[in-house]
Length: 208
Ligand code: ADP
Image (cartoon, rainbow, N blue to C red; front, top):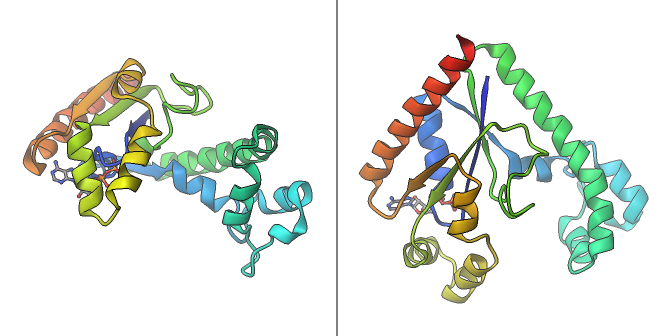
């Protein structure tokens, strides 16, 4: 099993590349969604979060009221650290379960972890996650800005989001493969096809 971390700044085209890799046969796990799942109704972090941060955080659906939790940890490193102590192991367990479930199907031996914050976490390789190869999707800031405003974000919001993220240099440094997505969708499909071939070769080497 080859586990690939796929990242990229907002608007760079990460989700599009994840879809393209899935169409070639990769299994894709949305790691950012796991963070939401653990505090959704029935999630493993619901009880510990209520115990640590207060029962007023229970939402009407039985999950955690995410905006209220976000307000507690925002700009408060101690509370954020306490939340991470609960959420990180919960996410890691859920991810292990997902990877095991994918392995059990024997349908593919390439798993792509789609994760926006792979580089920001540690400004380097976040060793918490079990990926062996890192792929970054990048595009020039003006192109990303155009894509974000094109899908409804205001220019100010889009600029703020771009400024808060890791730089291309930081991402490149942590990557084994970089996909440039400054061109059109055909170019991106070609690049994703080449990336898939390279990942397949690595997975085959692993299996040999
Ligand atoms: P990310 O996941 O990195 O934020 P997405 O893959 O969602 O980015 O892409 C952002 C937007 O730009 C989407 O609407 C997507 O369809 C569009 N897009 C991505 N790549 C291209 C491209 N090469 N040409 C035109 N539009 C693109």
